[in-house]
Length: 236
Image (cartoon, rainbow, N blue to C red; front, top):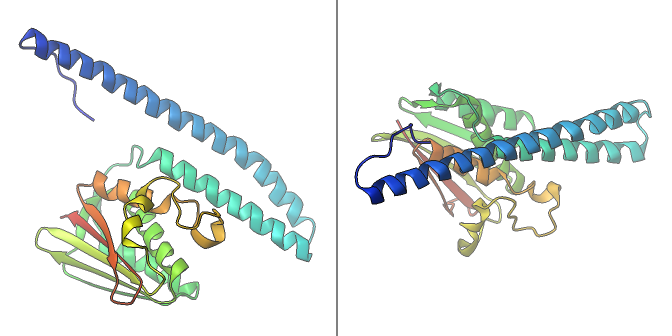
């Protein structure tokens, strides 16, 4: 986003500036229309999903009902993922966030669900961030790690003028040639698009959008645990 300005200077400069302003407005309209369209689709899908949940609740605990409930829950997660992706960080205002506490809470929640997640932090990790977007980012990364591995180690520390977070797992990892592709929207190594084995292909996209939107970077590498390492650097 660029603040308003008045084209000035040589004719060629004014012409280029005017073209930039027109382009910026077209991009803004496109993003607004896309967000409104998917928000409307999400709302429309939630209504029949809610009816289905109520009808399934009245059917009791039959074996077939359990499978349908699982399918409805998967559909709700997909709708939430699509909407989170298109909305991005929205109008959320940055504020000081204790990264150690935020990530520690996510790791604790994963442990309560039975996952082996170890978390350690040191130093002052208070960073100006959009808190809900930050939670979504690290939720996605840690959930991705526990989905593919049986052991996860999360480390957070201050490195100079940056906060560095590493998330290691002992899963199958990602081949080096695919480590850039996995950040693309809807790209999945598992071509079956089975949500049970890898979600809908937006978790890493949302995470990188958040990190880069805050002036940081996220990279993927081999982990000492044998699986994948995600390293996030955010300016403090």
